[in-house]
Length: 331
Image 1: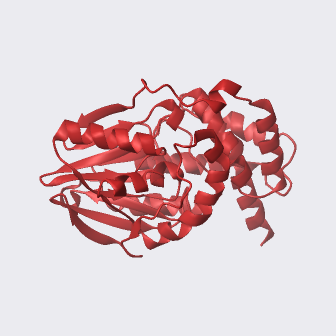
Image 2: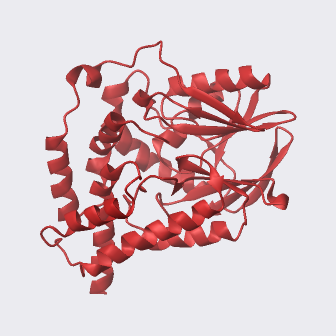
């Protein structure tokens, strides 16, 4: 998803209380919260109804991006001969409704399936909205198991700000099982790859037109020209996910942030994660973090990737990576 500056700051404020543990995380989260205070009117008032998300189409793949009030969240759809398949269900139910209306109007076809790629509200909050339209919503058993805890945390952060346009009840996608599987929907054959931890504890990656080196929908496992969300501190596992996706030999990759692109986006993400890990390792991390170390690492990453969006994500991600390496060094 692509975020404006205000939305980026709101995300960080919303998730700091549920970030990975440790003194460095808590200290930086408190400092960040004290430093960034969105205007009271914006915090209390929904976005004007005349604003609308944007829609784009590239062949049989469509993209919907919500307005900044909904964190400029990106969802995709695939057009088949017998209907549409959604990839992720949007952050706000109102955006899910707009996506459904826009895609169905553009294609003259109905959604028949939606797939949730991992347990974050920008992926699963629109589940009930799709289900209300008679659309089957699925995810892996592993992602479904992670939903209750994430929903509880994010509801504490977001519900008061967005009500009534935020689901208070736990979204309930169906499980397609705990193993990689092929599904047939809308006249399409899709391969749903069940993967382990990366930016979330569990992921689904959707492969379309697999036989011909086709499309790979990867969610936030790839960020194009944006800093990655390192909140859970599992870059070692994330690197394995990149290697798994490269073995699929896609022709085109559809990331959770930034524009779709060639398979080289996977190499770019791997190089970014390697850079994060190496910069942290240079500081020989122990707990608590050395004074000024996290700031030095952040500055080095921003200098290495000057055109990357969302450097504010590093305020949470770098302490998590620091803690991962510090724990590993103690073993």
